[in-house]
Length: 435
Ligand SMILES: [Zn+2]
Image (cartoon, rainbow, N blue to C red; front, side, top):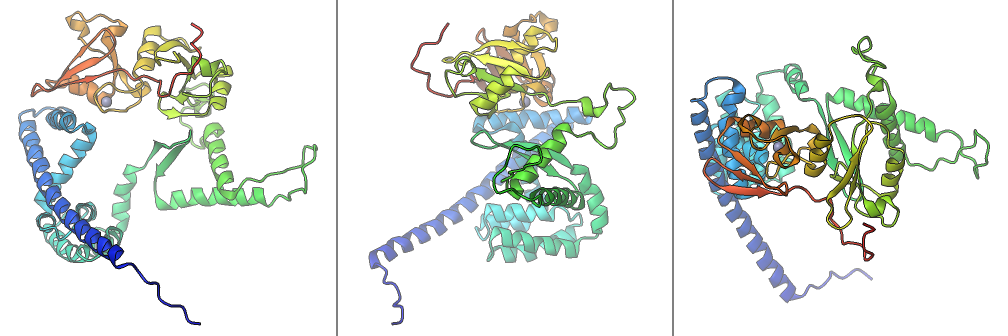
């Protein structure tokens, strides 16, 4: 018997038809709004450029006007000021260099994400004539294709129009190589690396070959007690991850210019992170709230293991189980106690919205030391280089309260308060704390 086509309910069809029509309309409205927002960002960027002309000294100093304006908008929108600064630059680029794309966005022929792809890829083309040709071809495609499809098409068109060979561009792109970290949920985190495709592929290939070699070691039916008996049930993915950790944490770089000057060379440099553990978890009475650097939550067993045998370069931070306030910080390597307190309290840079870890920050006197501000924990705060410079070089000011909160005042007079991070992010245990 042949399959009969499924019968759909007419009312459901009507609901769906309406939903699709409404979504199309929303998408159109969003595109228009995005175009309007881009114009405003670009206007703010022009002000920043105009102001920076009056600060003609170092490049760093000329950027201060832009940073100050980005911070002003960031506080108003509750956005990270780095994100705002990037958007300001991108907006002006779209307005100045991609007028046809902005026009298509304004007319809702393409979406904001399509426009971003055109700008992202097209920015490689310096020649205005080539860029114009690129724009018109890609906009046409974007009006009928997905974002991913548009990106692939845009790359092909840019490659075709590009006056500079891929070798020259690679030499430039390679300058952007870097490694970064992203926190994930469930006590996990990701490590990313951007480098030449050949190198990255080779790294992956070597890990894969090593993992396959490990997996090809004959497995016993049931592992015995002998030293050669193996019962390795790890997947290739798991082995690749384990090998990479092993190589990075214990390996010795092949090229080591410090061999003469640094005891033990680069291989002697070990990871330095803080393990933060609530007192009850440290005592084994609870399993919650432990983290690395107050940023990446980790499981209690790992935390207790690190606490018991913390290598000399790890800070151990014990926090109050209810308030999350720092109870004690101890570290074997000698360092001023007050610095440790401030870094442990602040967790990250204290400019609103900035998450740069305290360990990468400078310790700033909220009230200038030169103006009589004391070197005390109530007048010290962690600021990353970017926001430290913003405070020193622009009209942004900071005032610290006795509880460590900081009131920031922008050049336009907007105030925003930043409180020190509380490590506690969980419901207190029913038993009263033992202190
Ligand atoms: Zn910062």
